[in-house]
Length: 569
Image (cartoon, rainbow, N blue to C red):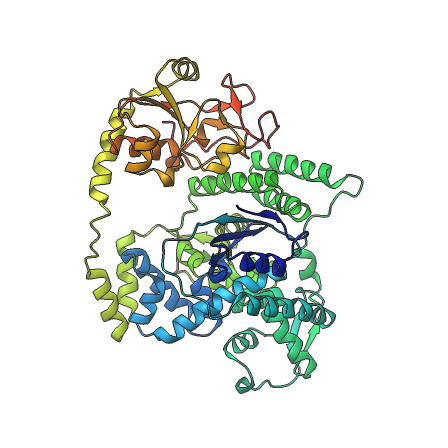
């Protein structure tokens, strides 16, 4: 049986100990704001972990440990995109890192992801019994007791660090020459980023190291008299969140912030939207309505930015002299992006080497573009970019890249040509199978009709059309369909998130091209189910005549802009 709760009521150490003593197998999911971390257990032992935070990605971790440079990582990720080969394997092939070092760092990365949870002041968690990823994982070399001891040590040390390093907006300055031989690989990367101008937050981005690792390194250097801290002045004010409204309760304030964020979103004031949503997130980081509002707003913003031409293939260039730009105040994230713009790397490549979340990075590109700090060059074709990266490589790297690009990676279990052929056939079949809300209601009441909801079980439980059955899209197989809908001639009605507006929690909108209805229709068609009808219109859930049921039925939801009109079918 799964367990769920909040880190305020069950500390990370107690949680790990409970799962260990119970010899649990499954996945522990811990969430804090926009970050989800997963810890994988097998028979009570931690075997690995994963994180949605870009700073925890393998490439960023290798940069922080000095094994790979940004240009090398960019080339390797381009090869990964073209070939489908795992990033670590590519880096071993081009001799950027040895296989032994890669395995060591992957284990260390998994451990660091877990240690960070101990420093979270709050967060939600739930355990999924018997669920583990299908991919191979590098097993950890420490047991749960070792993880708990190190995590608890860091909690105690953090209190002492904060007495000397009170916040991450301060600027470290070298007082005396620091001998690199006295530092480990990560500490050397951190010290290299100290230039008397960068704040601690800037250094975290530059070094790709965690706040704990950066601050503990500075704590040691300060105590040894090698580094001192100074105030950052105006830069501190530039990155502070919007102040709360003291006259409201926290619940009222969150509602007010979400409402104002919605108005800003409608006005396309995306910076204000982000600022208000982050303020709401700071007040109640794990409130479902806050997280749903953030996800919904980010989807709308990204779609609109792409529609405005701010695409990953665009090449940003500085539009003002460096001397002018350096006099301006930028946030750490903005400064990181600005320092990487060289007129050669496109937006997609810059995001690949960035430890910043895609929605945040794209908003920075948009702000810099809108404020006249950058311009965006014309799009290059993918083959051209790949060819230029291959041409820019040298020696053994060029040979290995050429071999990888030339290799025909065979997998009889994946057939892209067959998928595209069936997708075209399904699209033609679908033309006469999209129905109105009235027809959907009429047909759903007729005998022998099934309403199929292919969303996740979580969203289905929150809210679904009455009498619908749930078969989550990732779980659709020959066997699951045979068990759920044994007769292929059964009339099936489908719907998805993009059929309903103004219900961000249970029905968060996807991009029109990624609508679940499209994937579900094509998949059912592929498995031989041809008597399928799709709910066609976008319906305001507040005025819908469909009947709904679920845990949030009857609730009011955050209102969001409609799905961007890049398609209507």
